Length: 98
Image 1 (cartoon, helix red, strand yellow):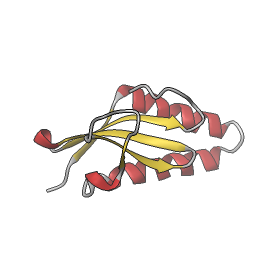
Image 2 (cartoon, rainbow, N blue to C red; image 1 turned 45 degrees about the vertical axis):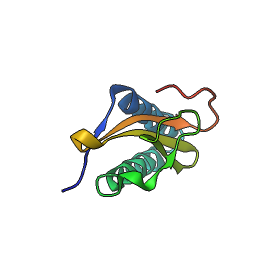
Image 3 (tube, one colour; image 1 turned 90 degrees about the horizontal axis):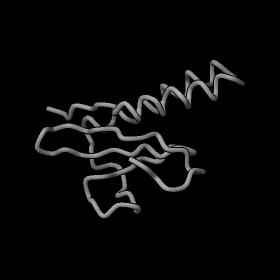
Image 4 (tube, rainbow, N blue to C red; image 1 turned 180 degrees about the vertical axis):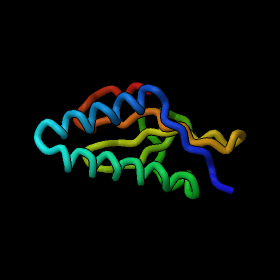
C-alpha cells in the first residue's frame, strides 16, 4: 500500500498563487502547469524517496522535487505512511521557509 499525500495549507496557498500568477498571461498554461505539479506530487505515493535531501535542512525526511522553476518541498512521515507537501517554492526566492 502506498503513502497518503497531503498538502499543507501553505502549500495549497503556494499552488493557488502559482496558477493565479501564470493565468494572468495564459489561463490554459496555468491550469496545465498546476496539474503538472500535482502529478509530480502524486508520484510520491509510491516512491517517496525520489526527491533529494533539502540542503537548507539537516533532516533526511525533508526532501524536494525540482520542477523548474519550482521546488516541491515535502516531509516523509514513515510512521504514518504519509507525505506532507510543505511548499511549492519558486527557485528565485531566498530563505526557504517551511
